[in-house]
Image (cartoon, rainbow, N blue to C red; front, side, top):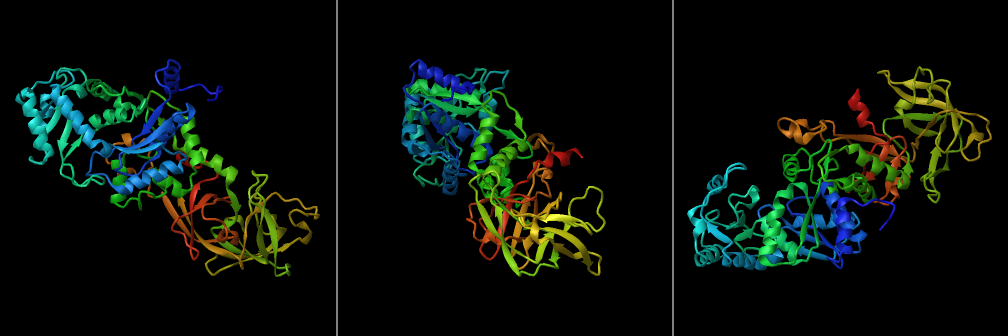
Length: 552
């Protein structure tokens, strides 16, 4: 553990617990419900729980909170495991709340036998009314006075499927006048006939989250159960269950969840986006899901860096999405291979070049001293960007125009002599001469130019498709915006460039490589890409242009 970095408040608690001998080592857990794909908010929790274990020489369990069979699926289980591993973490034990269904049922029996739980026939509306309000105590009903024997018999009948869904529930018998509404006889079990992805049809009653959570932590001997702030009111019930059942004294601690600008973190809302076709899938690169970010080209290192930078706090706040992009950009600048891609091409003909073609060498990454160089074919006909040529150059225009000179990246200095237009007045071809002695790396021309253009050889160029992504929403605080959140979807969050040309190195580069397309941004090959059709997703721009655009 580094002494240079100050401890956050959870680290201080753990350090104190270990120093006082409360635990020989720590065991944390990451407990997602498998009802959707993980998002960047979960990444913060993953980095926290696994990071605490790494810092203090402990371990972490991966436990699936699979107590709601209606919304859960094995697909989500597998995606969660893949996401955690991709982020760079591994668990000491893979657990499921469903592993403990028999044990949780036995715990419920114990509470009934102690007179601390009862079967209630009331409807959800009646239970809500009987609980009172934060300022008005709740009132008991006749079912609360059932005998232990009657409750045992009814609870077994619930388990045996003798009642319809919603006909009865098992409630804890605690305190209907508690100032904490969660302690006013909370539900422990409900009847739900639904096929479970692991236990099949073996059960028709399922424990509520608040009951399964604390008991599962205790069963696994979790020392520090890290939750988000909304679980603070649930903590007394967590402690109550463990105390009444005499279990391992797991303790719950809370931190502020991650909220980010220009996105949503609700699985329900993310599912809406997918089901209603606003995005293509859970791993759509515009989604804040870990799988979406992976497909877009984000790196696990940059996400871990982001989680480390935002830190762990006790108060809710909203983090600017640009900070995440900054972390991604910082890492990609160090590792991305540089390649040349022309997205809006016009032809450049070098009239005095008579070699046919040759190979020039261009560095893969100027930030990496061991990055090496690659071969780039050069010929007398090249593709350049349309906006790199101006018919009537303005003052301080350092790209190409009549009479102007520029360097072609890693190749030669050229001078524009003339150009052609089509019938509509669009420039189609630019003609130039080159200076043979000006080749990069061995330039003896003595010519100095201020502009450098990227290019690709027309005879060797490879067609590519580029997906350029922007914010999915066009308001900063989507969660608190008025009306339906879908009204704020950014109609320009995806633009696809189908007429682009790339240097041929991209056909040989590994599919998992990260790229900086010169002057374009950072890109990553999409998993739908094929050898016949290369498709790249823009991971992030070279600079933070979004904030500037919003201020205009």
